[in-house]
Amino acid sequence: MPLKTLTRHLRIRPLTGRLLAYMVLLTLLLSLLSTGYQIFSEYRQERDRLEEYQHRATNMVGRTVTSQLWTLNLEEMQETLDAALSLSG
Image (cartoon, rainbow, N blue to C red):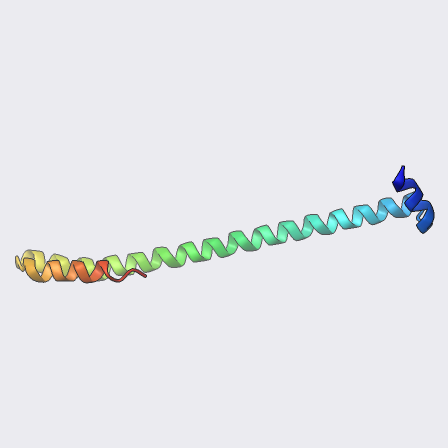
């Protein structure tokens, strides 16, 4: 019953109150949808950026390690792999 007394005190008609409630709910729904889309979009961009970085690092280190493996230069290969592991990005 406090809602009825509040509406009487503020002189809010039932139709006005419902319209106001619908507008607030619609605004809330739209803001939640747009925020969710923005978060998902940023997540995809960051994931794609990290995958690209990983592919570039793999290609860069992979060629060097392959070359050193074919020439059986194991000491340099170990140094290259240690340096690659220390590049925590």
